[in-house]
Image 1 (tube, one colour):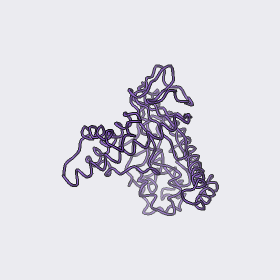
Image 2 (image 1 turned 90 degrees about the horizontal axis):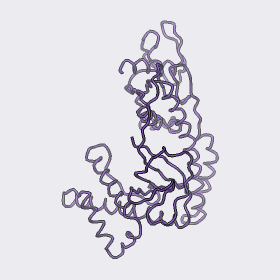
Image 3 (image 1 turned 180 degrees about the horizontal axis):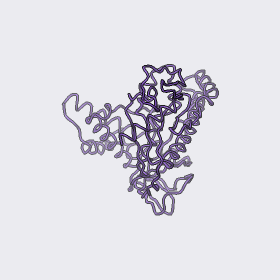
Amino acid sequence: MKRAYKYRFHPTPEQACELARTFGCVRYVYNKALEMRSRAYTIEGRKVSYVETSATLTAWKRTEGLEFLSEVSSVPLQQALRHLQAAFANFFAKRAKYPVFKSRKKSRASAEYTRSAFRWRDGTLTLAKMDTPLDIVWSRPLPEGAEPSTVTVSRDAAGRWFVSILVEETIRPLEPVDASVGVDAGITSLVTLSTGEKITKPKHERRDRRRLAKAQRDLSRKAKGSNNRAEARLKVARAHARITDRRRDFLHKLTTRLVRENQTVVIEDLTVRNLVKSHNLARAISDASWRELRSMLEYKAAWYGRDLVVIDRWFPSSRLCSACGALQETMPLGVREWTCACGAVHDRDVNAAKNILAVGLAER
């Protein structure tokens, strides 16, 4: 299967300038093609294909005032049109909303290079329009004999540069095991397992809240458009990046452990978008990053031959006695421990995880 390996790299001033121009051209072509397709559909009632936008891109390069499009590699520009075509395909299939314009300040700065636009030789990567290879920090090796098919270069809000290398590799499934586990996402603990173990929430956002708040206050005092404001904005972005990196690292370690130790993992189908509407819980839910936890479990289970079962979000896992099956009428969030009529004393989260496991195994 195809798998992407992401690394940091440190560009030279010339490379940074070339990539910044490429990012700008990619954004410009995407927005201009989106405007053209939207106008054609609104005024003429017709759909514009990728082939037509590709031919129009060639005409744009010959237009007076748009010669700068010819100064960068043509492959990232073509890839931008392909991404726009995929966005429209998802929209018409009702899998996504209508495509929106890319903002210079808010959109992700990235450019995608296919095999014809980069050179991979002896473990070095050189992009089109560049004379020297990228100075990549090889934090882990690529699979032996891997040949990159696509390379995506990006720069985040904190000013860090990344390169994502897509390769094909064979991932061996893990040896089968007899264990299964139910996972209950919680507020007091990140997750509670049906084994009774509670994974403490790291609270990355709370630990760095003071540093982030100070950086945001400093930013608010700077004059718009000034160099001081640009530096203050960078400090805020770096604080957010630190929180995000630590959270993702913790989730990767947790999900890898769950997948390695269990043949079947059962979770709830939580609607995080609706849950964060609660002003009392929104910050805690966002910091827990439940959606990213589920996403990691999904693709790692597929990689390693494990089963991931997702049960219905309306299943009353907290109100159901895992010992006798009796259903309680109500169970406020403040109740962390309760006693059933059968005499069983339950920890709210452990009981929910046991019920989630039982229902998931039954559904499987």
